[in-house]
Length: 466
Ligand SMILES: Cc1ncc(COP(=O)(O)O)c(C=O)c1O
Image 1 (cartoon, rainbow, N blue to C red):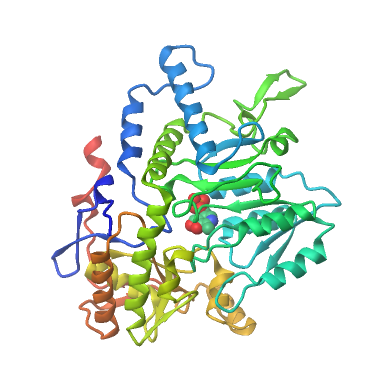
Image 2: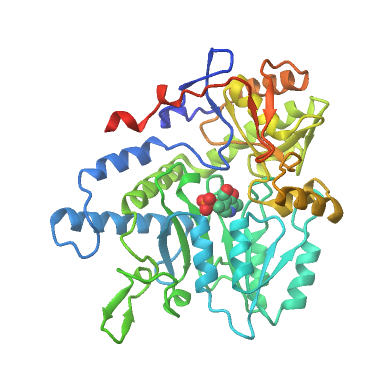
């Protein structure tokens, strides 16, 4: 197995454990955010020497900054296989902002007013649509996969009214990859467009939006730098130029105009029209350096590496009797899904498992509903009645029974040895072999060990910079 750890700094950092010892930190929460890759950090540091305002600055550093910002835009076009003649790259802070902009700016009409999304989406690819227009959710199969028969039925039912299908490229909970090219073809056949939320897919698979005259093309995609090894506040919405040429920007102010009089405004051309205010060009440049590095590593290598980690983890987890894996638990099929594994341990609260992993083994995972509440309730097979009971309990401030799963998720720098340490930890937890006394905070549902003092300032504090 290849080792990509040299591409990162900080992977050998040791964190304190409950018993006073230390352990090298293991991060299995890459589906949330990935650490900074050196290429991104280096580009950021190098560029900061030249940092200045972009666009209308006249000095050399300003001109260089504008040039580097536009170079970053060109890198993102290439990264997603988009044509600058037909598409825009709009730099925003993340996928959430990108999809909100999509919902604010998409030209819905009285005739074409329906968005088709699914019950597996991250809230970022669901709530913006619900607020903007009529939103219909494609059902899921029992394991959380898209129900393609239900998709066909809904496509048929809403064909005349369908404006857009907005679907995730890959699930942040189950790791299922949706057949988005097939869906794109069917969307276009009924006169609709497609938006693919690539926040979760893009760190693991290459994206190709294809040319607009290809019936399988993607009209819009969203990506987030912090999931692509560049946590410096930049993401992008790549979308059809003709859409953003229409209408008014959703956020107005400096940068989005050609000319303003006291009575009139002439909007700028895209993408400026949709990047109100001074942009985070430092973040965009670092983001572009990161995706350039990922391309040079090669997505075939990235996918193969993560598939091996996932297969190993699934095989080992399946040997532990009290573990329930959700979604696809076939270790021989890991080339066809993302390295995101949701599971539970019978008889132990998911928040408690995460707390023990963190405090006694130095392992970071994520638990809860992963901003995909409908999907988690579906996977847990909570009926409507139980879901409503829980909802009322939670609304009343009691999160003691908050549903959720434990999620381990891989990045390119993870190695098999880390999976083995994780599996040993899980075996110990299932056998009750942990030291701390964990108390649940009913208001959040989370567990904390009694007597734990984090002493963060020993590791990092802003104090020393003052
Ligand atoms: C599938 C998916 N979509 C959207 C998002 C939201 O991304 P961001 O937090 O970068 O806005 C996430 C984040 O976890 C995600 O996994």
